[in-house]
Length: 158
Ligand code: INI
Image (cartoon, rainbow, N blue to C red; front, side, top):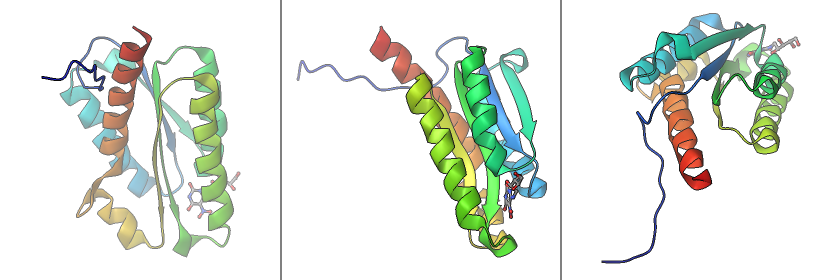
């Protein structure tokens, strides 16, 4: 058997505070992502008191909210949820682009897991598919990723 050490994250590893930043734009989709994220956290033993939900107007506002949450040091991991739908906006590229860039920047510069549960799709149908029907629930995936990355970072730091 190999003696090489392998470190991999997992779920259900002890207490942690999760902040979920949620955009209200396209709320009928984003609420489904939020339900998926909450179910995933609760399924793995996260208590309600360990979860805070922060609402912002749209996906463009998510980076500032996520940055402020990270700087507050009140959260061990942050999950960003939103839906940018090309069919519904002429400035899709700008909103989606700034959102992705800003959110990833926060995770890298402030050194905590920030998972990206923001749909960037062409149509409402595609958004529905990714919000709990045919193509899974991206909110659930983002929550699982946040837990896994937090567990991984705690192990790496030792
Ligand atoms: N915000 C979204 O979250 N999704 C969208 O699809 C969207 N569209 O279609 O424009 C959207 N726009 C609002 C934007 O996020 C900001 O709230 C707004 O520009 C004010 O800064």
